[in-house]
Image 1 (cartoon, rainbow, N blue to C red):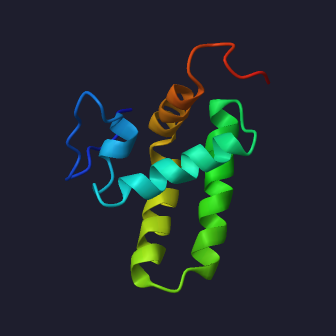
Image 2: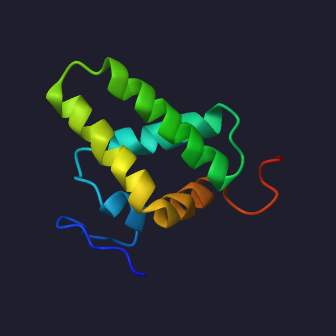
Image 3: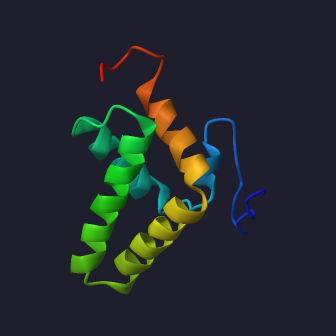
Length: 102
């Protein structure tokens, strides 16, 4: 089964397909969530994606603006429906095998 393309997905060589599925103005926050989870000790793609899901879910609970709520909801839906791409993106943050110890 293939994943449905998103209407504003414009991939460039420097932009991972996972991030291309989000509006350009939302991409820095999504990058930050993934980087934060890596900085907190997640060392496998699955662990990073699972932690991002928890972080975004918590943020959704205390979001006060519609913009923030929409970004959280969109991200959570993408984590569920485009999990393979999310895992692939998380793997790129780990770099070459062995860079981070488990």
